Image (cartoon, rainbow, N blue to C red):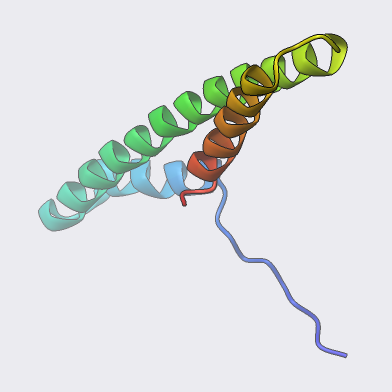
Length: 92
């Protein structure tokens, strides 16, 4: 039986390495660390946007589930928005 070990770095682990590079690294290492901090900040911003979209989609789905008289087009729009939010959150 094959065992898989997840070695995905954590945000807190990455940040500690970047801080060390910024404080004690070479000029080239400092530049790489600065660029990585900016890249991570952009990813975080994108994740926050995706979370907001997922929350809105979930809210719509909950509303749809509690309102049986909703028009089919409105249901279709809610589900379409939910699918799009999930795909965006997954990076598709």
